[in-house]
Length: 622
Image 1 (cartoon, helix red, strand yellow):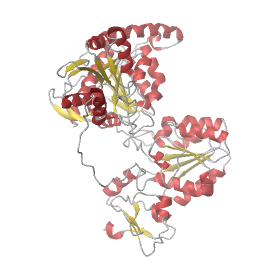
Image 2 (spheres, helix red, strand yellow):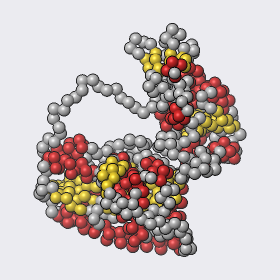
Image 3 (cartoon, helix red, strand yellow):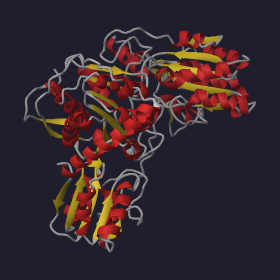
Image 4 (cartoon, helix red, strand yellow):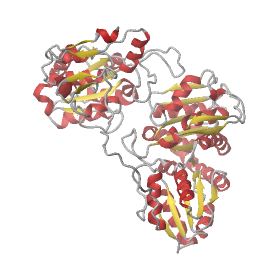
């Protein structure tokens, strides 16, 4: 049994931030959870996938974040405690529903996790989702460590039911992926099945009802403000004086506290855990008592703007240091060095470490790349072979997933990318705006998420391009979660397998071809035919993610590696300059070799070599 299901109040566990959120929800008696996987929130769903049935709660991987938001909202409307979680850009997808749920209010506690990504560790932007709490008028909490992640999740459910509103729990990558000691409480009882009591004035948001709901929303926010002003999560930490007053929230607090303690900076810290609505009385009292105020917050200067506005009334002579003063940047993620650098400039004392040994050898960069044996590499290679010299003018409209890594040399098969599902929509635009060849790419999970409507649009508007659905039988980049095309649901139970090909044909596409990417010649022929087609052409490149394939092969003791026969090798370097598998490398003496330590045994390099110099390493297999 998972340690997260232990009912031993007072016990301490070493938990990932995301695991702590799961534990907090279980202590709150969570009944229903839904999500579309997205890093840095992915481990929340992975954990529910493992323990959901044992916890006697319902969990699903929804087709996208908007769907997840709406199915969870329905559960809340039935009086169940519900949760949905997503990465920051996922809330963009769910925003339509999110804004309106604030109007309707909730019955069962409803908590929404937005996992922001300062520094763009795994995202296309680093937007600050604290704005969403303000736009929607939804209370927001920001944990600073794993213990608070658990405690705030538990509190959020109770608060949600007390004021009848959804609660936004905003995390960041560092919080989601930190590990820390967490003291657990008692597991809460489940409510099981709920019941929906009809109330059209509450839940049917026609204009006449919405105008009334808006008034009620403002009244609920007044209650939220009362709770915020008294919240135990907003507290002052005395660092031995009042030279500086520091306001901070979330993970940034940890860096502030460490730097002030190490440098013996005398001051007080107002640590805000409930950051919307802003506790203006608490903040104003803090501002009154400090001549110098430092605002340490990741992202946009939201807290800083509020402090500046309050200071004009309560302490106009206060000197405020933050992003507007140039001491912090709106870009990137905070870390100890960022905090030391800022404090050094503010207090006039160099806090940066000295005499750090710098290695003489600069380590080479290690950018992410398609795995050795990845079927996407074969697909891109075949497309380029089919395009021949036309490759340089062809437009590759890419999408969010492992296959975005096709942007790298030597594949160079990503020219345009906005967000999930944008590849097929943008490809339609390119096909009408230019006479260039257009090829769109997206994965199987992304197809179900937001790739279907683009097919409908392309058929309806007579767009002409080649649309490749890279069906690697999983949601690979976020951790191999199931999707509707796999035959498994969010609880690990057998589920109907939704056919990508049937959907595409049902949308009216008459060119639909499914090819195994390891059949490079067959894939090339499919592209040649698709490029010659006078309408939308769809290719389904279907082969299991190589990581899953390797696990199965190792389990069956059927693992292969490959080697290059140096006598047959002509050193043409096609395998490096055109194929580009990271397992193949050029030695200092100009010979080409395969690194058996990372070779996944696909053997596609043998099909690519024009001189047949690559063979199975039978000795290594023995």
